[in-house]
Image 1: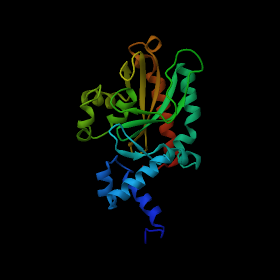
Image 2: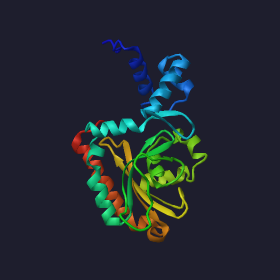
Image 3: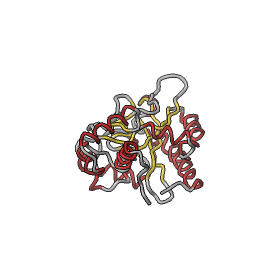
Image 4: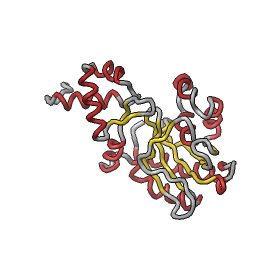
Length: 241
């Protein structure tokens, strides 16, 4: 079947998005992946970035943008986001802390849903925020199921080690204390597809004064239970692996 639509610029833009589906790319990588001329690839990528269909990671590489997540949620094509609200709110009520759902995009993690503590001191992470993958319990979870050979460069600047990630995978959850931000602690657990593929990380975060320096002791059971409920959503929906 002919994969072209007859609208050249649309076909080229689609090629750019398809090239970014699995990995962040530099402009040179985008040129290689799409076969487009360098000026064309750059012009399209920047235009898509303007409309938030494409973003940049901390190294300046092109990644898929937040607008695609928003459109998928609006279209009802993302069962996880469509049903996460009540589960995240329940976790907030149980722990009394702010709750986030993160997905990885290259070298950053994107907050795709959040529920804030209603009052008092809290860790505010707005939906759409992009945070480094080099610190924090959610970053640990999002990397713990990755192949070790793909982590070497990122771990060079991370606040945690490969040994830490191996422990997270064995234990099934991660914690961090003043790793991403001074005074903030967090606990995270993985949301897994039926195949075992990691889809997202659910997190509870707040001030160390409340979460203590062993936040997992307080909140790991509740975070794990919420992550399992989110994973069950994917199993029931028959979401793609």
